[in-house]
Amino acid sequence: MSGHSKWATIKHKKGALDAKRGALFTKIIKELTVAAKNGGGNPDANPRLRTVLQKAKDANMPNDNIDRAIKKGTGELPGVMYEEVTYEGYGPGGVAILIEALTDNKNRTTAEIRSMLEKRGGNMSGAGSVAWQFAKKGFIVVLKDTCPEEKLMELVLDAGASDFNSDGENYEITADLKDFETVKKALVDAKIATVSAEFTAIPSATVKISDVTGAKSLLTLIEALEEHDDVQNVYANFDIPDEILKEAAGG
Image 1: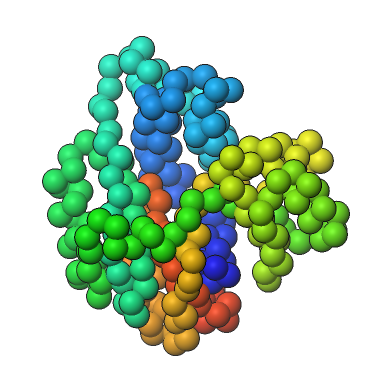
Image 2 (image 1 turned 120 degrees about the vertical axis):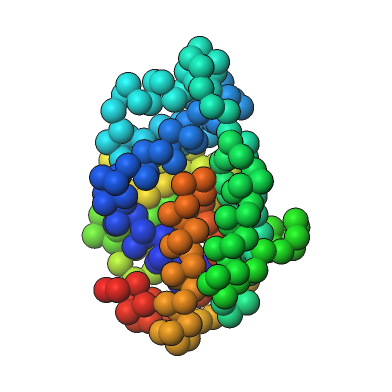
């Protein structure tokens, strides 16, 4: 997972630019609306909404935007309703890709995602062909200079984390979905800042990409998918060594 989680950290650092372009706000608004529609507008009773709210606050989204998105989801305000769709496929090098989207036109989005995959050396596959390789988890990243490793490990494992790893400049904490909120709260209570804390899909096995050209080709596809207006999350089972990943990602 190290290659993919490192890429996730690189993306997070680029998040401020996405927010300026408005792309991040658009995606978060959709997610707020769907979370409120499916689980209600009270974040105390809706863990998914609570997680998206934190994402909105991290992106400095205005409260008015947040409130409108939630009210559209609960039906208090009129608005477009989005359908949740998952696409499965393969990228260059046989890397498995899982794509989560929110769309108001499934036929259009499906055609666009298929085209993006095929134009960049990948292909769309049937339902269930890729999803079985991933497990939904809570995933938290903490910078190493934030807290001593032994203290952090003890804290999160006691709170219910299922795994703790040291990778480069970060600590990576994994938790089952049922324990994710408890682990996050333990970090908040201990005043330990996180780089990111979100739901993710962790692969059971990875495909190693060992050359810069192959890595660039794969990351170009992943980034294009992530920038699509309807795509919320992209998960892939690649593992790219740090030095190759850094060069392929442009620094």
